[in-house]
Length: 369
Ligand code: OSB
Ligand code: MG
Image 1 (tube, protein in one colour):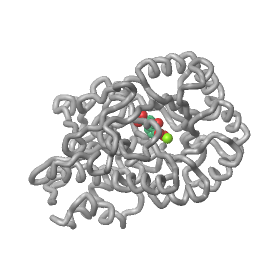
Image 2 (spheres, protein in one colour):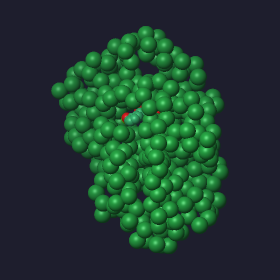
Image 3 (cartoon, helix red, strand yellow):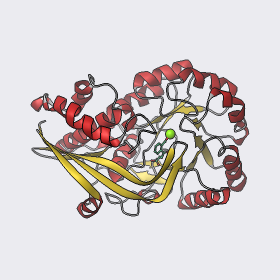
């Protein structure tokens, strides 16, 4: 396959409601879309990086630069030997920048699969036509406001609630949600690294609430700390930020640092490595679920395909388009009995809506091959 052009397109989409985590508040989603043109197809993907380096060290302006100056030239050097399967190896000499590598590999994979008429789900090995949807609920100003939001999501049919937590917003929201909605709803929390091992006794106070899991309580490089915390609390620990590769997954599982993994393709360099994490976890009997980064329909389509693999046994942060956007970049993903449908068309299986795209575009840059 030979690339003719890579377009980088910066877009801004307003979020229907502000999203607050332990590391910051977003009122819009700003991202770089990548459009790869080949002789016979066009592939699309979106970069998961955020404007500021707060979730991880990656951020959008850096993504644009590293793609232009360091990653695209290495793909260019492959000439017509380029394929999605060769992207990771070609980009390996560049350290880090997993989200930038992921967006390139994904757009190239989309073009490649469109050329051959294969869907993402078919290529990755999805075994389910629909996937159960959870929803990630941000930190709010008050408990009543949180309960209203959760009530709304449950009424829409979401099958699992994830509460973002931080010191000062943990026991009370969890207790309130359990008291109001009962023991049967699937409930979990995500701290985005906001705690330390000194908080272990405090975090153990969440144990009676029968949470599915506690996501990334401590720093991303603190695998030993997570292994120690796992011995001090009964809530299963799930890692997000800590896992950037299948090797990280094997290490974390072996150390006892987690018993569940949040697989985010963007964080691990793309869907091929994400599938390897799925496989490593499955071999260890460790369940996985598909995380999200507030993706538009472009990124969501591929995530939902990945979530169709057999070891994605827990509902993911694969919510419907209207949880994020009033106008998505593709036909909206909608909840059907709490599930999203895995697209079946070639590649990511969704089309970008040109009028919406034009409205949200701030700038475009072309890298000619
Ligand atoms: O930690 O999972 C996270 C969003 C942005 C950055 C990090 C995270 C999240 C979410 C939202 O939790 C998941 C989603 O609905 O896309
Ligand atoms: Mg997380």
